[in-house]
Length: 168
Image (cartoon, rainbow, N blue to C red; front, side, top):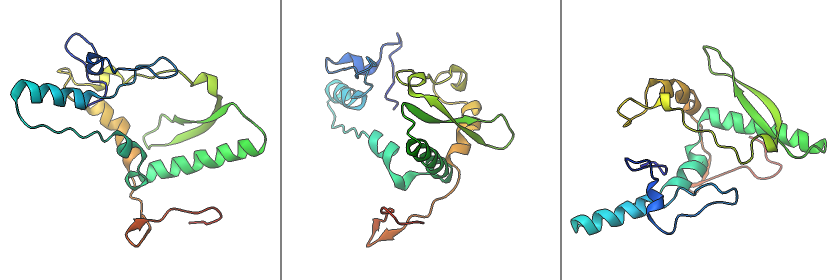
């Protein structure tokens, strides 16, 4: 389930517990929904239930990266290092999607204050009318982002990442 799951009145499920917190920017921390619903189902139906929160693994594992992701991250990193070497601070690299038939991005730079503490919601038109699925508009947007297989180097069964000074 999504961490932003809501009830029919629009209340976030994570707000059903006193443990709901806010981050340093005052944004609601959308965590704990799985455990809360696990507890509800266990108590309501008297059955054994287990929930697993995968958020960190899904977002952080280098083993799940797409070719597009890897290319864009490396290029953004190169540009950020170049800026840092020039002494520029308080800025971040941007990726702006070009309006073309083939997926392409344009790299740019913006002041961090233009991005920091700003939320960009999931477009409502990407959600199906019954609010139970994503529509073709999202697939058109999202599929290019997960294209490209990455070959992972391993050593003794463990991922082998680059060390300082090493090149691919």
